Length: 248
Image 1 (spheres, rainbow, N blue to C red):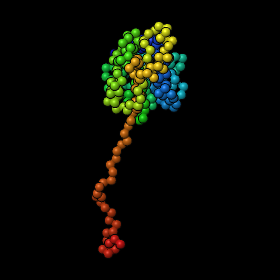
Image 2: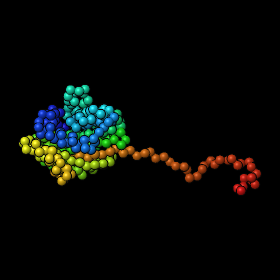
Image 3: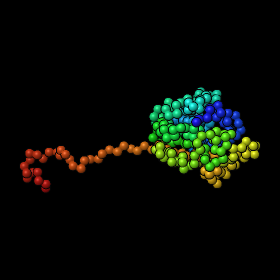
Image 4: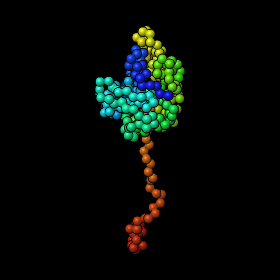
């Protein structure tokens, strides 16, 4: 079941813990994708907090929000780019998206494989996607005070297996939210230190979210080669005397 868009908005934009979590995950996404000049960037679920850095340079930015969650206008003070959509039928042409970010999308879905197929459909050949889900082994998935405590959490292996089954090629594994989901000032002020330390010490086990970057690989069509036998050979030598037709 998807969370309500108002609850997600209030957490990420109106609480200190939410703003710290937003920055930690966005910084990790930017390390993987530092630019998107001239590309189409889309986010599904509630991924819009991660898309702001691409607004200035991307050719197009789209915030797709599932109907059970609800939609809000985004970004504030700028032309709206968010749209309400059916979970398994996005208003996006096939192969249109270059980069896709999915956050708060998979863990609330009742049909994960069909959702992944829709993600793959909208990506162009060689397109990239980052899937961000609550880490089953992390502290954030055990706390109902944050959005990561809702829905189905994943291990890195479970997410990787689901993505491969959907036809994606895994490129990189990453993680974020190494600080505990605690709103006390000490944890908020030292959040950046915990992110740096966690990235060096552990890739997944202590993190709040699991992140996997994948690509869409499309095989080139195979064409049949020349037939082994020529069914209708040329008859250029017909009618010549036998001696003229013999090889020299």
